[in-house]
Length: 122
Image 1 (cartoon, one colour):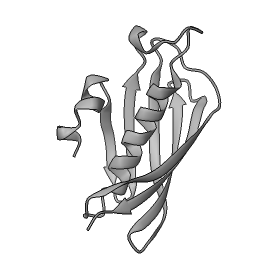
Image 2 (tube, one colour):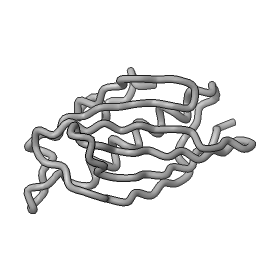
Image 3 (cartoon, rainbow, N blue to C red):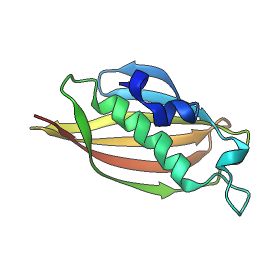
């Protein structure tokens, strides 16, 4: 899946770890990702978390997509920060699942908490 993900590749997102129901992705914040407040635009943080979520929810086999997601921004990221998103499956039921993703800066500070709801395609 990641091999065909042009959006993640364009942002330099790397898959660092992958296990059943779990994934870790990494991205360096570039100058092009900075908003008018000199902070990483939240859309990029969401995209990183969403990529980790997608990797984690597709470890079970069937093609799985997002049914919905929400994010809470906790602290800022700045140019040069390396962000690490760790996704973990909370539960799967039928063709659906719930996954939590924590995005941290390289200093360990939490940047955002993301919750994704997945749905297997038939």
